[in-house]
Image 1 (tube, rainbow, N blue to C red):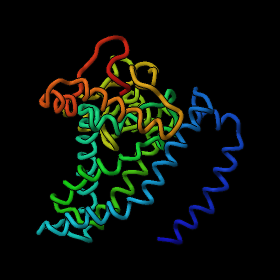
Image 2: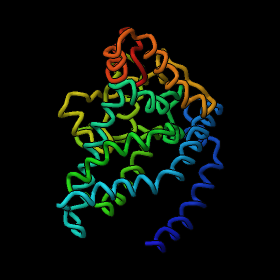
Image 3: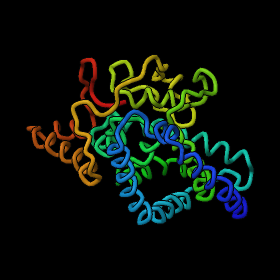
Image 4: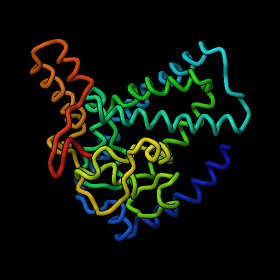
Length: 278
């Protein structure tokens, strides 16, 4: 496949250069927000990329180690095995995503992604530096389902590429959200308005949101950001501020039981913009 990648690069790089030369295209990519916000998202992404360079091999090796302990495997070379692995991954993504919005410990990591006051492709880069570690915990369950390290590496790469496109500023959909996710539905997830809170957790598919009652259609352009929490532009502060807030919350609890509750159960708030973004 390397020759395919080289050919794609030869075709796509000039095309992207031409598109980015257009002021209208750049404005569409940026959205309604400021250049400062877009640069902030990109800088958070660079920090995350640095952790990926350090941790990615270790995380894949950890998954392979768990998979080696499981005596059964999906057929290694059967195409249907990759389809099954992809479907299972998307379900695990949904479960993880809901947990990240429910448990303060996970939210302190995930909320970095929701801090942006605008919604555009740069939000795809805005990922917390500890996100890969929490993701591994959930993705390890795929090994228990018989997914091999090779299959995991393939489907997680494709899944990540498709998720990246969810932050594009477009209303294009593959139907009314019955099966497949789209940027307009994921925009709902990032909305800070009460009607959009805790909706559309799905990754590539929206079937799980439909099954578990967490789907909401796009009805109006939402406001973005995390209500009641800061939206730091500095990438280090963006990652540390939610963790610092979590520590303050734990210190305020009088008993160990309440500290554990504050660590794993996130209280709901009420109002026009409630709890947190998305």
